[in-house]
Length: 428
Image (cartoon, rainbow, N blue to C red; front, top):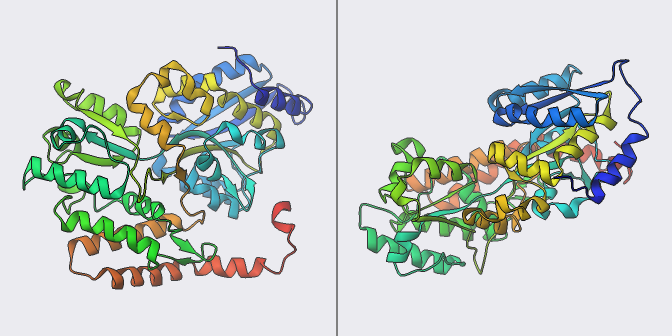
């Protein structure tokens, strides 16, 4: 594919004027850190970039996800960050707070309409975009369409009331020892999604305190707890079932909220005779189709890069729609560019349709560096209430107190910034 967009022309005009600056005699060498499987696959795309740009060489370092966060922090402290890196979008706020990553150049910042709004927003901190979505994910319902049909439903409902009624109908079909939905108690995503659907910001006052005791989250938490107390969901985690795919196949549960990484797993691990009996659907919401989480990874340029112009040029190349489609074919990662979803490779896949629709209704996690710690506290609290007789009001109040302590440093830092002039943040 040779299609070029206005993005390519704008970026090339920006970059060609400065591409020679900072060359090393033999040309420019970029260091690119990418994680996991993506770090292996991107090297194939990089070779094509180098052929197109013979004056630029790219050194890709593949880093395991388990080591990536610490390695990036260590590199920042030691002044040895790469030119470009792949960052999980929940890390953008942290590395922005460290002043480690550069804002987008204007030519890229003005292309936000090429991306899903909620996904793009994960990269925007204090009104400034710091990265560009490389691949995206969100969570939808994977479900047994045959069991839903047996319960009298031709398609997945769109509201909480209808969804719960469908789950109750499935429970009547499958019997007392099986369940309508699996909501792992050692995972926080379902509680976070339901909370966001109910209008909860999860954190209040600019991300300086918990908002879990407030009516919006409490409404979502009551809906979540009812699924366990009504016997529609088993009070267990991933480590308490032998194999999620086998249990789904035998009908131990009929639904699970999960992401695109499981499309390939369901196709590989479920029996052949079940392949026509499962489907995906966008998340129902309180009063209609609901939001889900904005996930994925973005590409960023570090402030310490010696070759920022060439670094942005590589990012522009990786974000071309044809490269996004190719990356999807190599990894299964969903494209960040909306144009790539129009390619027949993606548009012709019925199980991707739910993701395409849901990505139009996603919201970022709270953009504070401490969010992952807060989310673990949320998970622990929800599990304790599900498994014990702990009153929900008391548990959520205690959670807010714990989160208040976790965010103490953030409140202190924001208090120090308030006296500064309004334009300081944008100039950092």
